[in-house]
Image (cartoon, rainbow, N blue to C red; front, side, top):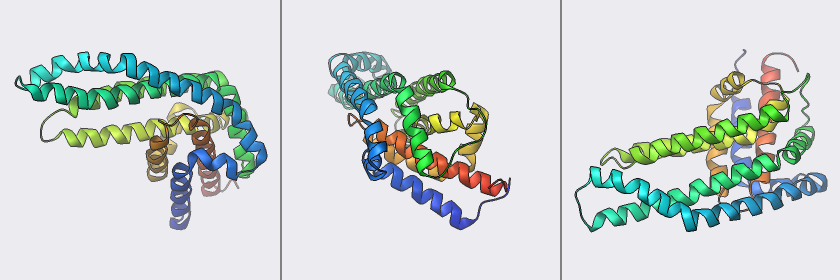
Length: 254
């Protein structure tokens, strides 16, 4: 593949950062049709994320605290600091995990609406992939695999983050992992429609690490707000359309 010009790479990064920074409001800036198409997934998102918060507060915190207690007792000497550490870690971990589960459940429920929303954004950006896409079932499977990978990786980084001295390194890696998974979710409808397999999607991400991770990092801050993920999908579709256009130009296909 031909290497993209530096100016084009900077444009992609700018698109990624602007899309992630204002994700919940992006649909409003793209016209009435796209804004109206985001209403149904917006409502499903609100219900799903609020349900996730409820589960996190009333069940998730106790579950995470019990899970951590054995690890903390094993790693640190007994004292009042153990309970403080468990509380400090359990609350954000439980709330974030349950919100993400709510987010993913709502994502799957509203996937047909989000797919049409992403298509409208792609057309708005002047991109329509040739050929037949992978279909909604493949997209749903991809989203589910991303969710399981995110939860497994986050749990691992959470535990490793408790290691004295070097724990902050794993906290940073955990944030990058979250950013990647959120970006993959947001890009998924557009990349599935373009017919990209999982290996091809990961290769695309590898060629555009900074835009993808930059978008995911900024979008992750919006994820705890009910109703934000349709906007994140709009941002992901906008970024995906420009990534695919740049790839087509780089290959001389456009």
